[in-house]
Amino acid sequence: MSLFTELKTPITGVYQQPTGLFINNEFVEGVDKQTFEVINPSTEEVICSVSEGTEKDVDIAVAAARRAFEGPWRQATPQQRGKYMLKLAELTEKNLNLLASVESLDNGKSITLARGDIGAVAACLRYYAGWADKIEGKTVDVNPDTFTYVGVCGQIIPWNFPMLMLSWKIGPALATGNTVVLKTAEQTPLSALVFAQLVKEAGFPPGVINIISGFGKIAGAAISAHMDVDKVAFTGSTVVGRAIMKAAASSNLKKVTLELGGKSPNIVFNDADIEQAISWVNFGIYYNHGQCCCAGSRIYVQEGIYDKFVEAFTKRARENKVGDPFHEETFQGPQVSQLQYDRIMGYIESGKAEGATVEVGGERHGDKGYFIQPTIFSNVKPEMKIMQEEIFGPVCSIAKFSTEEDAIKLGNNTVYGLAAAVHTKDLNTAIRVSNHLKAGTVWVNCYNLIHHQAGFGGFKQSGIGRELGESVLNAYLEEKTVSIRLGGAMF
Picture 1: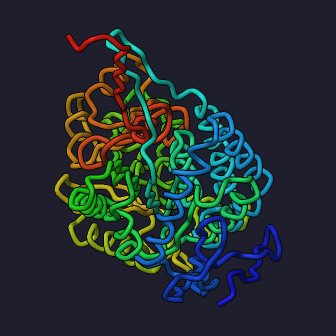
Picture 2 (picture 1 turned 180 degrees about the vertical axis):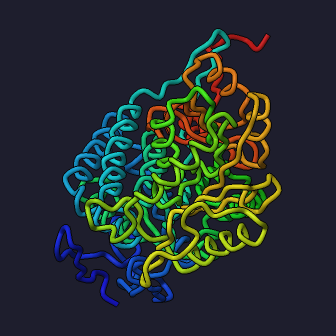
């Protein structure tokens, strides 16, 4: 097969799309020469086919990463590593429209949000480039010295933020001197393959960054269980996270970090600025088509403003522009795949069957593509499926509460603990409730404001470890104690 194909987007026109596996700074066919189709979620049509990586290809990529780790990447100074990363950030910004367009093409997210993602990718890479020469050891009275690199890192990213998750994974890994074998989601491999060209252009030594397109049960499983992968980082569902932990434990006990699912509460008190709260609640659930692990899908509104809030929020949801992701005014594009579309529609039907009230939406949008109307359920009960399980789509449930204690109890009534939000004008209320919510991130009078300088991760079944900020760096380092005896007798 050809390792490139000619594609076209409305923003960039014709461009050359890599379709091979990126191993050792080259695009190559998979060993078994297998391919799979990539579907445009807006049209349900095939965009192109890409090489499918299997266990054999993972072996080759891991070997390339190991050679780079033991060779040129280990020999590079921290300052040199930082320069490579800064160059990659610069090239990302230079190619922002191309990367964003490819992201919209195979993911379906609006071009406006995609541009924001790519800008955040560059910022994340630049931030971790700054850390490259600031990883320090320590000397104490008994003469130990600390720190060495982990080695080869396997990284498995999801389809909801393909480029952004790539940067969250490779940024800290590279800054701390590791090499990477990264598997993209089978639904959205294209933007990472375009990005791979920039890796080579930035001057990275061969083998430092390897990108595999493939399926989780094959390539992802091979990475998780590989005996020469020293650390695996995964973002995705809790079910798959458990499987990765088992594979890591039963192989070489590799280090694991997991950023998993969520069922996040968005709590609105009587004294909140209703107009502002509605704006943030809307953004909290419908951003990225609801395909966000920290989506505020359980909305709790205090009884004094409940009726007014439901009416205004329903009106706001109807105003969201759903449609072609390449139209600048579009806010919500299609769901990523037929499988995901069917899954979300199944939850909507479940909500209806269990007696919840559809305030708005609840149906397909249009007759082509995987589009779903922004949906709000009211008259929900805590035990309903739509209140307990992660839907991962533009669907939320709204319920009332009476007291602060009720809000905390309802907010924590979930197996997840990724994020939460509190809307109130009372700072004391905000602090008290934030302290009692079992969530890794709590926003006050806002939502979805994630920044590369602040750690992000969950409590309970929402994961292990943290992404972003300084918090993530230790996950990519091993502490080593070196004791040196400076001559003299033992006793």
